[in-house]
Image (cartoon, rainbow, N blue to C red; front, side, top):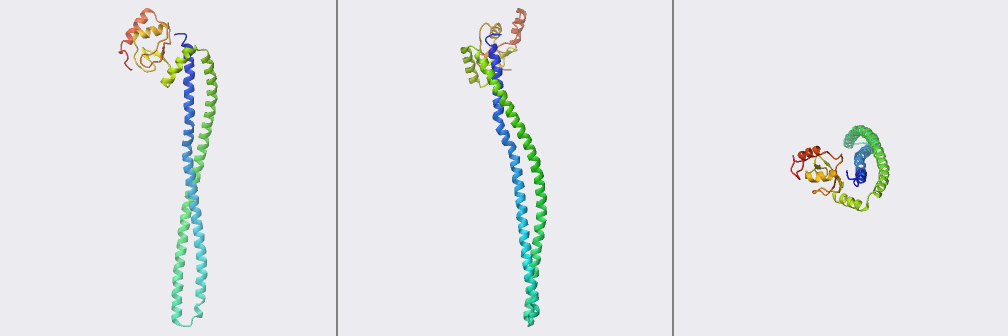
Length: 258
């Protein structure tokens, strides 16, 4: 391997891990927002159910007050029967009492319906509370896990950035500038290892002559397709092994992707 590339390879490992950590940290707010959704919906449903119960309870109390007032009014009507002198007035008053009794029945039926609905909604509110409690517990656990992850990643990132600066200081400035330029244009890594005659960056078959030159490590070479700096991580093969390597890479056409 070209000795100039050794520090760059180590620097690239740091850079790739730094990029990975930054990507993970960028996704944490999205993951936090995702776990907020079910909690928000559960709270809203619980509040709506509770509000519906309160509304019906107020309606039932209002009906009970109406019933109480109506019964008092009916009793007064009944007490007046003995005061009536003509049969016509008596019959008319009895009809009014009958109408009042019917209205009383309607109010009582409305109260019963309210009580049934209240009972149903109270069961629903209880279920909503249990579901909310379970979701709140899960939310707390997931948020704690994400907070722990954020802290761990932040700590690791700070350490890696210190190492990155230290590694960069040991790389020749011109070579470092070239490395950073390629890294910026490729949006990932600037160095690519040759594996079985293929550039690990673009996955295209490389010319055998170029592979031999990279293995000799006498100069720096780039992939003719993706422009990444090439390196070969291995010992320089003997003549027979070199011939075997040429035969192996000739299986694919130059520039053909695997």
